[in-house]
Amino acid sequence: MVRFLGFCTLKTWRKAATLAGVAGLLLTIVQTAHAEPIRGAGSTFAAPIINQWSRDYEAVRTDGGDFTSPDWQVDYELVGSLAGVMRLDQPEMDFAATDAPLPQEDLVKRRLAQFPVVMGGIVVVTNLANVGPGQLRLSGPVLADIYLGKVAKWSDPAIKTLNPDLTLPDEAIEVLHREDGSGSTFTFTSFLAKVSPEWKDKVGSNTLVNWPQGRGTRGTGGLTAMTAATRNSIAYLEYGQVVRAGLRFASLQNQSGAFVQPEPKSFQAGLSTVVWDAARGFSADTTNLSGAGAYPMAVVTYAVIPLNRGEERISRVIDLFRLAFAEGADKATALGYIPVSRELANRIEAYWSNSLRAVGN
Image (cartoon, rainbow, N blue to C red; front, side):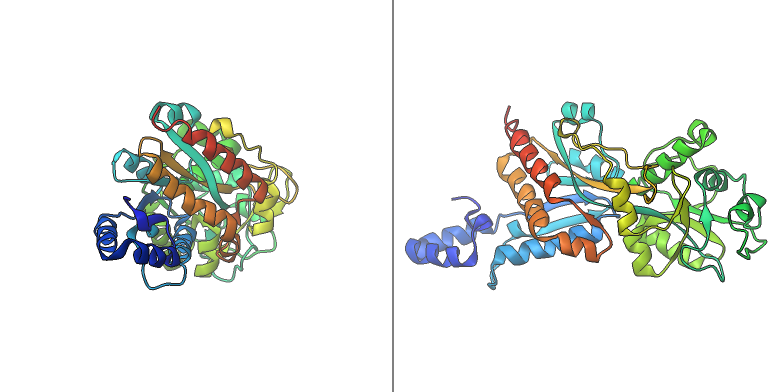
């Protein structure tokens, strides 16, 4: 009975131990010694909630007892979306988390399943004296020109026109960005490519781009710390991290011309217009979203599972996210994320059933 403890509660284990006797108990313990945690890697955007769900998963599976098994634990590495997807080539990896969905042709070619696990927003943040959260207003084209180096000072007329009532410093804008492969970068550059033809032609959108200027650092935590330490800076970060770090965000102009502050209800206003297609691995464009109250840069984190790991390993990953959908929405909301809706979760669970039929084919 390989990995017997991997799918049993403590109460079931005690009952089985009594029935099997000492010999059966010893066999079970030996087999459990070879158990392995669920191994994942990728998005730093989603790391706080994945880590929270991982702790909750182990707590539920131990069922209030003292015994735990590696099968109920999750080893998640914060390496960025691009590196997480690349690590799926390593046989010990069970899933990647990415904020840049893979196209359907890649999923088919590499025999992967993909589905959303959590959502949120990418926020423009600044470190400007005497400018509070949401007070600075920026449009997409002006933001693109800042990152292109065409708007180089906070006192530039392009910024002053949008902010006639703000006193902005006559100082150089310190442009900051991620230098590792990042889903946040994918979302941010995708937005810039939609609102600026020049950005689209010169830079484009991807998890890694050749930045025209600025200073880079690795990881969400690294960019958060650099922004907090750099006066007159501008950067892009996930909403929950911005709130937890107490950074000041800008209001961003959306398709309707409204300047919208980033917050869960404005992310949800845009995400509510997304059409989720299971046949395409639920891949969706969540930048430059429409709607009067929509913040234009929403982001979705996807779990990507290799279908060649065997049904037992795949089932453990699904078990983790099924529990997250059923019981983890409040934790996601508390950390500044948008949880997957019950309707979408039902569609994802149907997708799991269909995807698992492909295992072993």
